[in-house]
Amino acid sequence: MWSSRILHSAAKVAPLTGTAAAAAAARTAAIPRTNALHQMIRQSSSSTSAISYKRSHPHKRHPALSSEYLYPAAPSAEEAVSNILYNTPPGGRNKLKQRHIFNCLVQNEPGVLSRVSGILAGRGFNIDSLVVAKTEVADLSRMTIVLRGESATIEQARRQLEDLVPVWAVLDYTGFKVIQRELLLIKVSVLGPEHVRAQMNSRSPNYQLIQESQGDDDDTMSPSNALRQTHAHLKSLTELAKLFQGKVVDVSGDCVVVELSAKPDRIDAFIKLVKPFGILEAARSGMMAMPRSPIYDRHDQEDDEVQEEGSGVDASMLPPG
Image 1 (cartoon, rainbow, N blue to C red):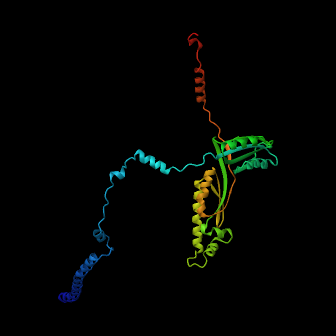
Image 2 (tube, rainbow, N blue to C red; image 1 turned 45 degrees about the vertical axis):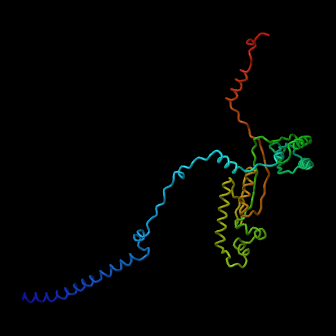
């Protein structure tokens, strides 16, 4: 009985053992083919294997920085002077005709402005700016006039203005430390300079205006691209206004209005910088000026008094005669 069971189990194990042997033989035969495949991948020039790529392309070491680059030699006096002279802007050629600032205190009545401007026009002066406004006194107005000319002729015109009946005083702030301010309202396009002329004659939406200006070209800008371009220009104008301490007071689909209060020179610089965007309209108020108040130090006054007291000479110490 036991022998029959053993023979039966041996008959079952025999086929399993043959199958395992066949599988082992198949795996053994597949090993050379796998090794050959890996060898082909390693020998190929493909960059799929990072290690093989790094081995075939070694990293190039750059030469170390020289001491002349890290510690440059100080320029000579001649080179420094040449650099300063090259970067210095040229000065004004006509120094005789300098800018003069008049502060006229006049009576608040009709006809004063025409009489003042008539005297200056009669002498051939071109008024750069003229600002008139009422002061805190009801019957007094302040008139700020900026003009250019020779100092001798300007002084004669100032005395002639003082001879007018409604004029209380004419002060010349030329050469004094004054606070200068001017207000600018400027409308700038956000579509680009190539669309400014069409934008002045049309109030169509910005994307339609761009498509009409481009005509039948194949590279017609889509509304989405026009919107991106508009926002890019708007961001640039906003950042530029912040640099000059200005602010955007109005925004529309195709333009912005910037308000800026600064010196006349900064106003001119801002206009030159926004000109490439396309200026649609600009308005300047004219320059207003007020002299700076001096700062007095108590210690400086005491030192001046001590010097004045010590400057006297004692008569008893003088020689006789």
